[in-house]
Image (cartoon, rainbow, N blue to C red):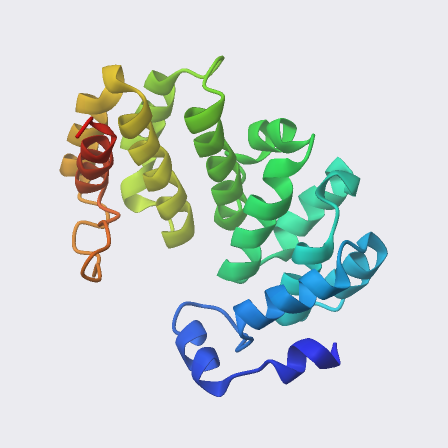
Length: 214
């Protein structure tokens, strides 16, 4: 607990707090600490249970994703309230778990929008890597009906899924772009120079362009 606390940076905290996070830890240094500690599942569980954001981020770096049972992961999805912890939990742990598909099915329509956003992130993973068994038409129907008025984090997860459908599945690309244009979600998102806009029509078009032969 003391070592992550020593990595606190007031400037980083100020930036993170603007995005809903409550830590100022230098993430590069936190990763170096995790590399030194190596995998320690028991320590990871104890760090998670502190409810401290920096400690939980460290826990997610030193844990063994496949060691968590389904109920523990489900509880962690509800306990992870800050954006960075939630993002790392989904991407570093849940996606690598044998319970990922079960949680995708169970949580995509969860009444808690933060938990539902995790379900949508797992859907997006399937769209991109294991699309067999998914019906993009159904996903697009739900996105078209619900994304516009969804809370921010759930909206962002649904938008990511919309973009991946358009990028990875040419037969649904026109409809994905049309939905994005009609809903206008993230159309005015401030995008730094050199970065791709998260506005789905722009995102899809740019990523498809990059995939084309030179």
